[in-house]
Length: 152
Image 1 (cartoon, rainbow, N blue to C red):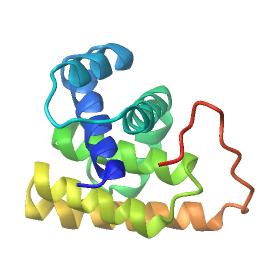
Image 2: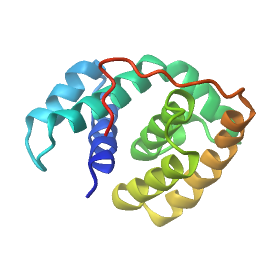
Image 3: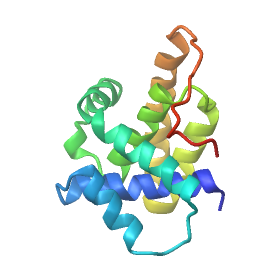
Image 4: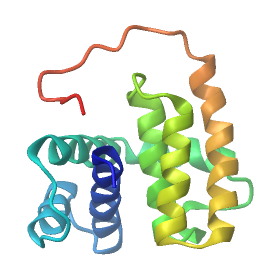
């Protein structure tokens, strides 16, 4: 598994724990990374932390954006895994302009395929396809990396 995929899965797990256990995102991230499992290097963990905490900080805005695209589906009706994959991918579409849209969507679909159902892949793909139009409509600006934002 690639480092970015691993980072996205770690970020998803942290968002899931924060959501389901109603735990602060930083604490959820610590719980997920403390339990071991697949070895992640420091850069991978930094990328995962940036995704998880970034999505968590913008959760209300992300939920609103997702809800606007998910006709007749409130966020609480969605499976917790699906809801958090959408949050993670929506955050990445908004904040990580250096990552190609196709990569973000493909990664989200593969992660949903692993942690959810085949039916969920179609649902997630449809919503993310709608969300990518928002990114395409935004004026292109140069993405400046913060020092703590590692290149993987």
